[in-house]
Length: 374
Image (cartoon, rainbow, N blue to C red; front, side):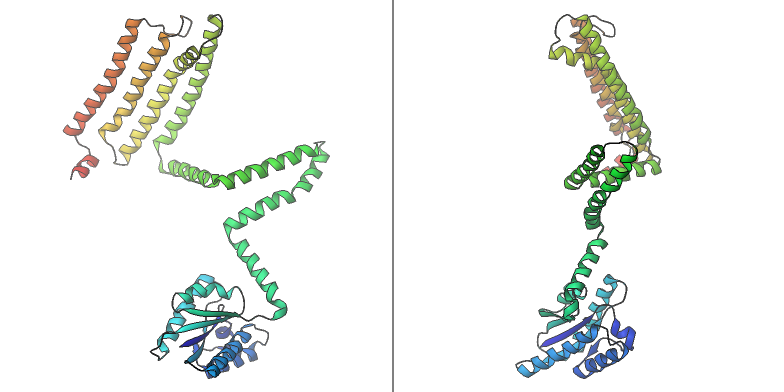
């Protein structure tokens, strides 16, 4: 069985004539078309209804199978709700058809916007064809308008197209304003070109998603009262100081040692000057993380290993780097025996902390560990 389906997405038929929808049957659809033409002769949905009747008559004249025509409407103002309403009316039409044959549809619409409902129709009944009925003089104009409307309604496409276009349109006013302040036009063009380049890189590499995620995480940390927000800032400041101290010690070693410094000496000097500050940054950030885990009832004893591991690594790096550096101000020079003792102390610190907190987990399990064992 063929079902000629006339689609009125914004419910002009119901709003302007008061007809109850869906409308099923040739006589009922013809009466609805006449009523709509009487209420609003300029409405394009009139053409849809009459085209549906015309298609029904042609298919019926060809013979071979049963043909029916129906008109379904959506809701004015919301495409999503309109599509849902049309789906419900199609279900009513299919339930009302008394036939044992498989039903196939021929869809009649008045433009590109109404065709957005095709996936809804296809999910309920196979579609044999689509006929768009538009006044010939307005067909291209309507399609262009609807396409532009869809582009401007999509935030992703809107940002991709309108932002670069807006920046380009600002070139002339920026150059004009810059001329009043004796700023060369080439400078303005360079800045605008840089903005476009950065925007293209952000869009091309998807960095806007990364920035949005970081901003969202920062807001969550701020509003949730996370200790890590403060400790991370302090840790960053300590790392900056450590980097400066490493460079200063490198300059002091360079001034004290004649000739060029080898790569090993350069690395040792930077590490020796910065490692204490980096260790303080690591301990600070790890303590903040442990605090947040405790407040969130996710604390485990093993989390306390982190600051001890940081101290252990810092002791080893400080001793090894100092062993290779000359005796200058700011350098803790170590003998071979001192180096061995420092390495042993760093190793024991890490191992003993691991054993101590492993015993603590077994003797004094936290709530998280108890739930996991259960």
